Length: 314
Image (cartoon, rainbow, N blue to C red; front, side, top):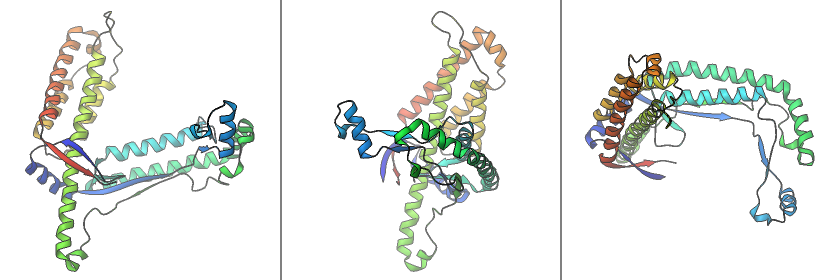
């Protein structure tokens, strides 16, 4: 178990927000089964590599790549993995337990549907890679030379690539109430404390994301030293809107000041015409100055907020 200090609002507000989360949220855990694409060299091989450069063996580490990870089908698999993990994070809030996040109970149905789609797509891509597997191994045998070891490779890729998710209980079991009421009450307090930590972590995550969005937008709105305009993509504005929608949906409603700053930032970009923004120096300067004011207020809020210890269960 590790500890970290983060900002938060008044204790009473956090406690109420945590109680609300316990009523509306559940836990969800995501994991992947995957093909290992690297192996450490054997001690003898590492010694041989060290001797080549007259280096001490205990200061040398070496590994080999088992397959070409630039293979198009393999990259499709890694893209699907990344998309699934990103979707999981976008639909959830942090929780102080490794690998576990909180999901709204009302979102479980949509989450299930999307994850099943990812699972099916992953299986389909893995089936294609299976057809290319012998070719990949042959290429590796040729490139690795004496470092090639057939035992590094599973005989088949069936079941190697998979995505799994589960909904672990984060509440104390009801039988404890009968078995030992005092222990049950103790566990209730422990769970409440974890959810209070989750509230703090959610506030921190929202604040950090707002800082990132503002910093990126201001950077793109600021001309180069020689007066040249920087390229400006619509995504710099669209990301604010997506963030605001996500915040509205996932908001733990524990920090009115943070909520106000996020709303203010969203209002500043609402209705902004990207084409006009690219053409108008005045519009870019005005929006940049307004966003800097929001960032200043946000930085002040984070700096001056009370401190609270968050326990993260490893």
